[in-house]
Length: 523
Image (cartoon, rainbow, N blue to C red):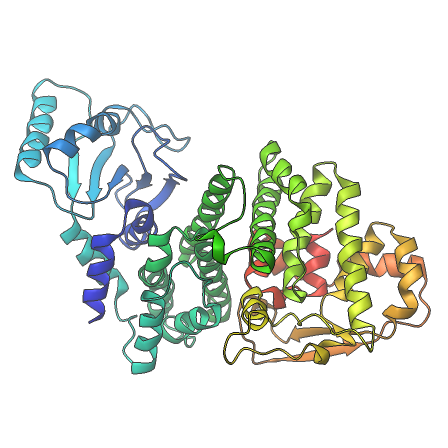
């Protein structure tokens, strides 16, 4: 049954969506990956560049569907670049001939095979210094994927049910993150085995298994759901590797594949949004109002997150004025549906600041800070849903879906994000707004979940930890408040090393946006 599902996925997907699991297959075959095309083939007809076990350079061009003579003629220019142009990479001798591979999830007609043979023979006979073109078809791909998957397939009825829920999901909806984490942890990361080969296979198979399960979101082009899924997988890989005591070389390439996919999906979301004039989705008659504002806040936060990542990781990265313009003209769209909106607003605020829009950033921070203080500190007002309620949960409750009810009065008097917001204001010397509202603040309990194990920040549900809460001091020294807000002494090295994952992950799991995490990201 699972094999048929995998075959169905491979047959109906495209090269963009089978690229990640194919990279993982190459890793398992002993390759070292040097380059993966971010959107289209930028490396002169080469989507993937690797070095195999024998130390030879290999270049791959990925295609979708069966290749007949008509399609062959359409792609002949790319094939020519693939085999004739040398690989340009700092670690590769461009004067040495590389291996070339045309890969498709379909088949190749006999007529095309004959042409490929003739091209290879002609180049060899005439002594041309060109690469020999090899072919990998869908049948070989399917076998490689099944072999690479190994024993890590859902066998228990409950696990197979989880797989089917993901595989048959509505690809236009939010990713069911709790189910997705449960699926990964049950099948790939259920326990630390201790055997090196088992742990390596658990990590590598998770890439391939995830690609299968995300099929509905791939087909619908749901870039944000895919971003959440690959970010979640990267987090699961990192956490499992640390718990298993794995050497970095045994898991880092798979982790990098997941992170690359997450960045690619954010980039695809960015390019899509920059061609649109609004945040409407589907039939406009069923859109708008709160749904529109929630979607707009999520999209703008995600784009700001991508730009902050690029700004942090790539020195000299040019600020994209298109993203800034989109955020500036959509300020009124921003909506605080509850504590889980905070990470999205954080990214927007930080991005505006690095673009020189400090005044607008301060207005956004102040506006939502005051909204929390007024609602959470009042006995008459209802509160905002706490950080464990996602945008989807809040939306379903607001539109009155059956079984989805929220008693907003239970959220009065406490907050998971007020503490980080106070620290943000202190770091920005916003003394006036803090002084004017400090008395109200002291009546609001500041909540936070603190896990016992540092790596458990990178998962959905934690079994070992404590729910910590405290009230702010009745009187507070400004100097002490700012000192505490800027202190990085408690930040684990793990967080510093994986800053990009942490930035992405709090959008996926807002309940992991602890004081320590926000202090690091906001420093």
